Length: 312
Image (tube, rainbow, N blue to C red; front, side, top):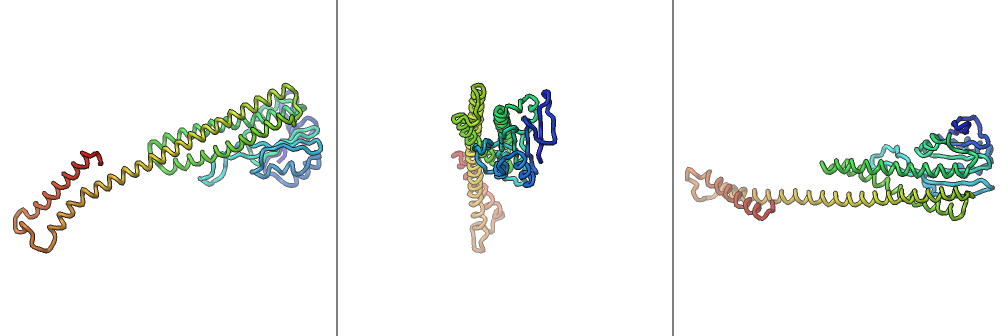
């Protein structure tokens, strides 16, 4: 699906075809015929449009016949039905600067482009360079918001895990950890991309735009640091819970072993007195009470010993 937007009197207006100073937004479902038509109509290399189809596409920039391509990774919620998949994944967003328009191509519906659309009425589409920088800004903001949401979910799951050690909570923490791995990898790649754009001045920025780009690099570094911190906290938490579970298991096994030992001697006494051989006091009226008394005394003595040693 292809959308065309233009800013008229600080209002976002949807138009039917691309015009000078317009924004072209390509959303799923993506069709090869639309890519071909768009590439021919705007004189764009077809592979620039199809790069977004590869979810593993790395962050990079490229130029071909004065058409500039920037691929940057953005976060989005994972709609997979597999319960072991990450809560969030990162996807490539393709930004293309043509002679008269700016294009964005998204293989998945994502929050960053929605945020940009909501503020499009404040943009100046004629300044395509600043438009690209503003998209970078929305992507970094989406990373920040997603990291805060991930940290909030982690705290909730940890509280549940403190109350009851269940596999469901551990699985949730594993999904959060996978999300953070995606974020760290993508943010590091985006950081290298932004720094390279600054160093090469790929977008031909003026001084004010360069300062804005430097602020974006700082914000991206902050998001990367947050992701690293949350990753380390989560790894430490999982290690701590693994140790707690192992200790609890050892405690249960130790108690079971003590109970087994305490019950072994009464069983031994009962087995001896149950043998079909002559035994002392077999004709006594207290023949039943003697093994019961001996079993009880032995159990109490062994139990007292373990309690004294603080083994039970």
